[in-house]
Image 1 (tube, helix red, strand yellow):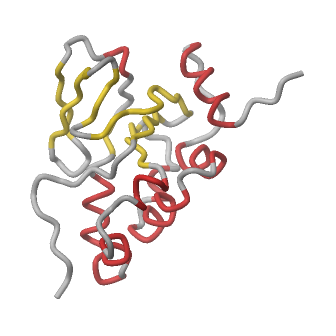
Image 2 (tube, helix red, strand yellow; image 1 turned 180 degrees about the vertical axis):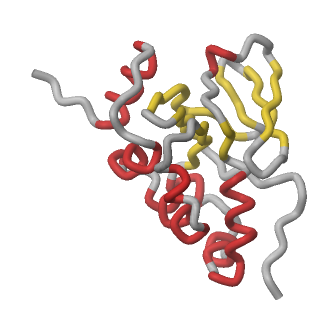
Length: 164
């Protein structure tokens, strides 16, 4: 009997068209590669939303993606006085509804995030991209949506300003 890590199992189920029995937050916790995203979602008050029925699509930056932010940016975003800014950044990673890469019929598509800002999805060099982030693991079906693992933190096109 072969043991499949939670993300591998979720990915297999996604490709089989069946949803697994975990929501976005539970799947992210089980994977072990989204600890910063989960802390940020809790700090922004979005963790409870992402555990709700949805459906939602989340472009999920890994811990490595968060660690690649410019020095001090993550600490600044995580300050309680910058909660609105953090929520805007995380909302830029989230869509209402379930979107899989199989639903994208053109090499270039756009979607509107929960914050009302557009993201561009495109096939580039054989991989799907969302803006300038590579989708390293697409189409992970969970019971309340889809997770697409990305290698960069997306920043909204309208500037995010820290509280003064």
